[in-house]
Length: 342
Image (cartoon, rainbow, N blue to C red; front, side, top):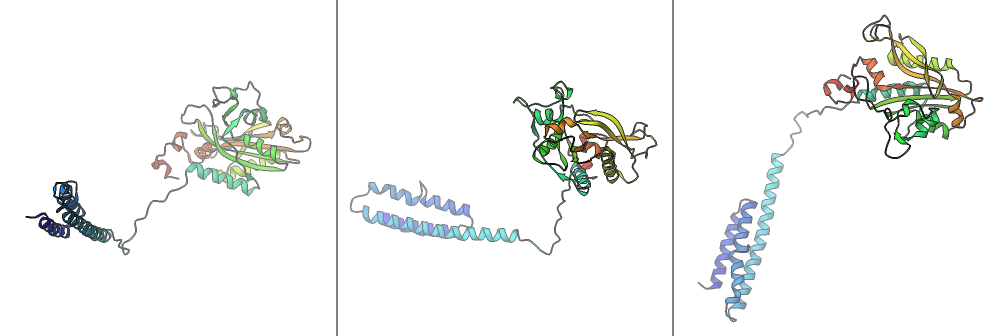
């Protein structure tokens, strides 16, 4: 059989095999059989050098025509098969819009976020604004400007998380926000500062190295201790219920004078005494006091012209007291059995 006849036979065989290919895999197998490195057409093209100079032009031309023909019908058949695959896929994945949809479970706000929002709403209703500040602070804003002496225990490595850079730390409370606002704002100032705080605590039922606080500050002319007491009573009754009693006990904080700790009558026993309140009928909720004149001087306010009060509360503690949670770690363990209750 002459080479020209063989090429014609290969062309016919290739056309039939390519047309009969029922899948992309089968089509690829046919392509390799005829046009691959060891394919029938390729083999003839490689053997052109063995032919005489008279035979070579005609056979080379025919071989190239057969190759071009096969490439065209392969591309055509490939598009046909791809369209068939797409059609089957669309038929298999068609959406029946008459079927009822599957409702995805909706996410909810974390309990801590809910409490922060509740506290914020109370004070916005009293005319306060929300202020924010950096969580990575300097010793000046975290301690010095807040009248905290250099030998105060809170500044030790046992209590505070310092960075490798001198004088830089993770803030131990959100009070530095108060200093930053006062340095940039003339009185009157009425703000709350919700946010995260950090201390070197070992996690246990009542302590966490990361927790949330809401600090508050009011500075204006003729602010009195009575204003502080009335503000905190209004807050406690809105958060814990209108029947809550509030009491203030003397305490000490470097940045307030006088200072107090604030208690509410026990939510569980209504002040009669139970296991939750240790039998005393009261639960501590926050610390507060009148802004120390040294702090006012530090930010450029005249203590003879203005006065103010400040308060700070732990959000986790408020949540624990309000909902009877006995372990602060439950807020961070992401156990949906616990979180979904709220």
